[in-house]
Image 1: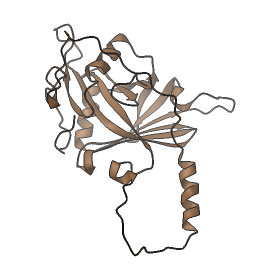
Image 2: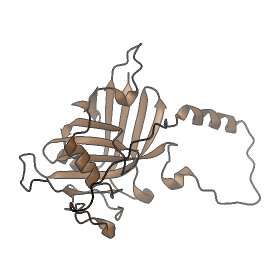
Image 3: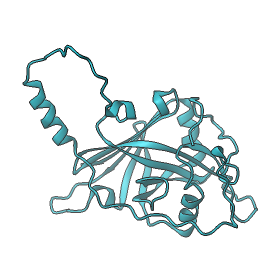
Image 4: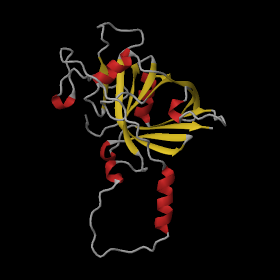
Amino acid sequence: MTGPHQPFPATPPRRSPSHPVNNNSWSPNRSPISLEQASQKKPKSNKLMRRVRSVLRSFPNVTPTCRIPISGRVHDGLVHGGTRITGTLFGHRRGRVNLAIQQNPRSLPMLLLELAIPTGKLLQEMGLGLVRIALECEKHPLNKTKLIEEPIWTMYNNGKKSGYGIKRDPTTNDLNVMKMLHVVSMGAGVLPSGNGYDTPDGELTYMRAYFEHVVGSKDSETYYMMNPNGGCGPELSIFFVRI
């Protein structure tokens, strides 16, 4: 669900899968929605790309006499040579924000983190400018755990220590959110709470976008939020580092 290229507002508009864009209405009377299992395909590492580029630099520059337009990853918004995934920030406005990483909007989350920052505050900061979240964990010599399988992270928000990020398994409520958003590729808004009553933590809000996933090494990965067609919108980068 792609909208006009506008900066992210401090207060997301009321929009829910019960009245989505593209006229794909969601109704609880429909048959249950199931999410797909994520494939086990390993993401590409930048090491191979760097080696290829170093080899290409050794060749002389030749200007072709016939210029043919070539479609590249830059046209897909993949400017760092990574892969495109779906990222969703969601949570009650005054409660902690959750980050879900999926291969696509219809798949089960590959990663679910609970971050030590209120949802409303993070979305407000994104509306004001660039947000960089760094998640760091300690490296152990004999540790063979995959980076995204690390259970706990020290969190830095724009260079300021902001508590911890905790990896957890998706709950029934988390999966219900993913199911409600299965037709949403990009967008932001407010989701129905499910019980019809307000909670002390405020409305259940979400922001979903495509992210470019870049693997630097076994100890570093980065997720860059992609703005559609390079438009001016909120900027968010999330760094996972094992040091």
